[in-house]
Image (cartoon, rainbow, N blue to C red; front, side, top):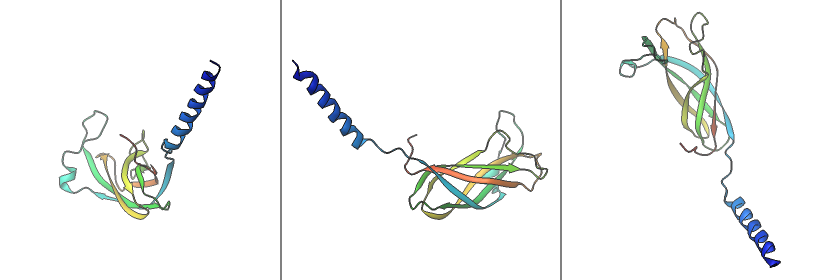
Length: 144
C-alpha cells in the first residue's frame, strides 16, 4: 500500500516530462520593418462599389498602399499585422479609431514587396500622408 503513492508520483513526473518535450514552442511576435511606403489609386475593377465601414453608406476612394517588408530574422514570418497611421491633406486622421490596417500572410527572409487595399472617405482630400508603418508576425503559422 505504501508503494502506490510513490508509483503515482513517478508516473505523474514521467507524464509531465514527456509532455514538456512534445509541447510546441510559443511563437514570439516578430517585428518587421516596412519601408518605401507609397500608395496609388486602385484599378477600376478593384475600386468598383467601394464604401466605407461603420454601417454608414458613404462614397469612398480606393487606394493600394505598397512598400517593402524587411525580414531580417532569417526565417519566414507568418500572419503579420500591418500597423500605421494615414492622414489626409489637412492632417486629419483617415482612420482615427484604428491603427491595424491589414495583414501580410507570409514574409520570407530578406526584402519582399507587399500591398494593402484601403478605403478612404471621398470627402477627405489627397495627397495622403502615410506614417509609422510597421508589421508584427509570428515565426510559425497561427491557427485560425
